[in-house]
Image 1 (cartoon, rainbow, N blue to C red):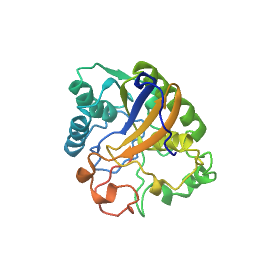
Image 2: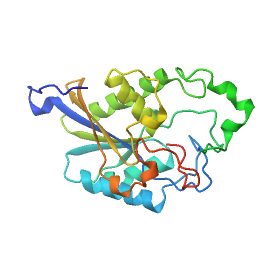
Image 3: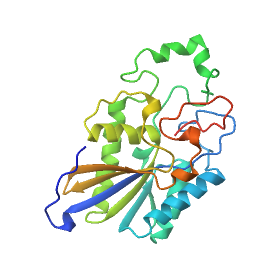
Image 4: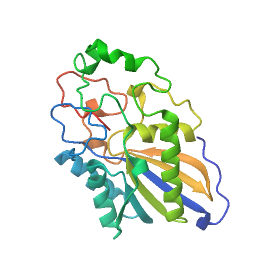
Length: 233
């Protein structure tokens, strides 16, 4: 989305940063989806701290996260840095996926089993999980709530890769179906929506912790068999 000139007073401008959580401890390479019990790795905690430092000087008045542990743990140092209570919004949760709880690696896992192929027939909806349009509706609801809570200031929401990418695609008027390998939403990245009044006027993207992200987990990297796995987003 191209930026527009913001001409009204600063009180009309609200910024909502939507952060993807940090790296998760997941040695077995499980597509954990919405499963409980998956926490940040030590590296993931470093990523969360790095982004908290990056945002420390910003005018953040509202911090909210998905109810999943990895998002809560990522958001906690950000809220603490601003002396805020951490809110929770279920609309920020990971997308539903029929492969949740299964391995999903390169050359192994769920896709090798013919019984699972029926879930791959429609990549446009998609047939294997929560419809993209449903993700747009709930994520836009969460963004609007954050914009209202922080009106005239800044908010930080912590969510998951697919819902973040889908709501960004919607805001930038792109098709929702896509190649997952080309999502620009690296671990601990910030997708930033700037509102003038109630209208999104620009979308930005930054990677404050990119030096901490392993090369094979960066946006556009090819999956490598045998590397540490961090499935689920």
